[in-house]
Image: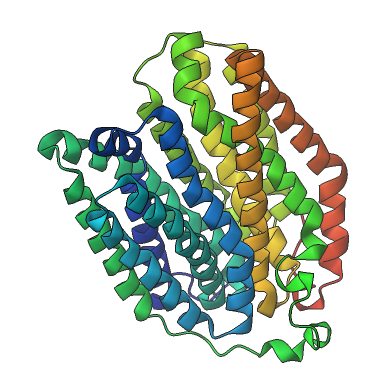
Length: 406
């Protein structure tokens, strides 16, 4: 444990990740309003325009995992960051709804690739004895950006009534993040040819998806499904069912605070290698959060669930990410990261579709009861099958044989 966690390279990749998500969340809450005011877009058009970003991000993830595991990771990282950066300029120059839609849709690809590349580089620059703990702290940069950026964006818009200012600010911040990442010095890594089963067919499925982690991915899709419903239909549900208006920003802020608190509190367990224990705690707390949300349709259930959901996901996410990575060889880390993110994205996408369908056919209450049930099913799946599956798969990876499982 004498190895330094907060080395210069790790601090750089953390700072660059904060800039990445700060630029992203700076625009996210106000883009629907921009489309309506600037292009007079209808609600269904707004939904289609914004969904393109998620779709291309999802499509890019498996290929980005392949790229960072096949080519020099820093070169891939810088190429992805440059594309992510330059697309913000496209928003400024988009003079029609069609052009904006094209820019926004294409922008999702470098975002999806960059999140994989940056997190994989973070793993590479961490000392092996502090890797579990470092991955847990790494997520703090996402959480802090999510907590701060939307509030700053809304404040600046109310102050200036100028969307273009936000586009320029996002462009500048993304540029700063790219500059920070450019200073990272990568450790020397073995080539992908060193692993026997990677020789031969370069386009095998296991180059795009970590097959030995399939059950972890399936389990994560359940949790993504739940968050997909809540994050997209929260405002409507809280207004129509709970009578709470204007509390969405506070709800997400409380989630962010819960995420930060749990990542800090769970760092000791990750440092000691108690991945399964942290994941178990996270799934149970998250199940309580979604259950409280639907059982108590009032301010107590609304804001209480936000804190608990942050605490639960803050334990769950780094534990699952560490478990997935610990089942991968060092030259599969990009694939492991992309596999987890793909499963989360698929879950969110299914949640958005199912939430809209159930609320249309039955009610929003039925949609959120479905969320609570799905989370409990995901928890049971983890406790009954995924935990033992992980232990068996983990024991087969000799590179990590000395790490504790509990």
